[in-house]
Image (cartoon, rainbow, N blue to C red):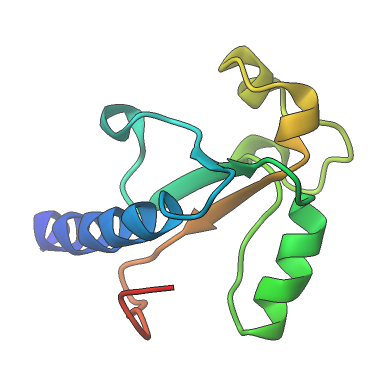
Length: 109
């Protein structure tokens, strides 16, 4: 069952990544091969992560504006900086996680 869950969540992740890649100024932070199944971290050119969180929350989408190791922190993530993400860009980022029990409402944004 664990393999089935991983495959399903990876499928959600792939569809989300493909949709996000179509947004101008949106960059996927980690290469596909190094991502954890079900987690997508992105940065944006001109929109603060907190602003995006507000808009997503208005539409019932839960997300975080930090790397998982820095949730609730007020400074940029040391992990993102170690990955080469500029601290300013790190403040314009989102972490989106998909769980095994969640079902996507749609396959497109």
